[in-house]
Image (cartoon, rainbow, N blue to C red; front, side, top):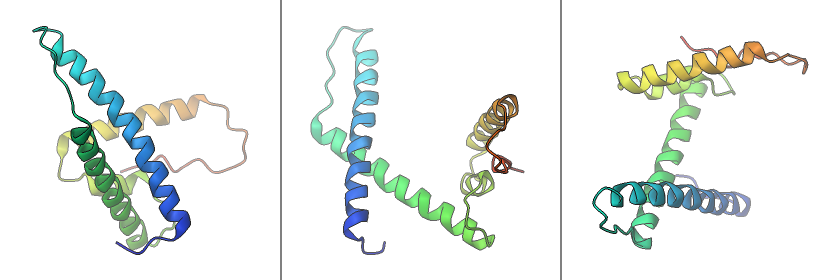
Length: 126
């Protein structure tokens, strides 16, 4: 991992803060769901949430680097869904889930009126 500039460090801190909020909400919801059937309170410690945030953050960084590498290998400057399909190619279930989501996005994109003058073909995957 390369050395970060001050702006990149600030951006990383902001991303971690947002991840902390999102992961915290997901953990709260899961804890509530797991506690409900038996009535026994389950708690997630701040250390657990912090560890989970670090895990998610590191996965996001690795995913970003992989996506950049696939786009660069294809001599592109833009990451496309094809790059994501390359990252998840070993997981058939995840690949299928992403393809279905992509088809839904493409269906919505076709329904929207195109008035921005830009080419909207970035949501294509083989």
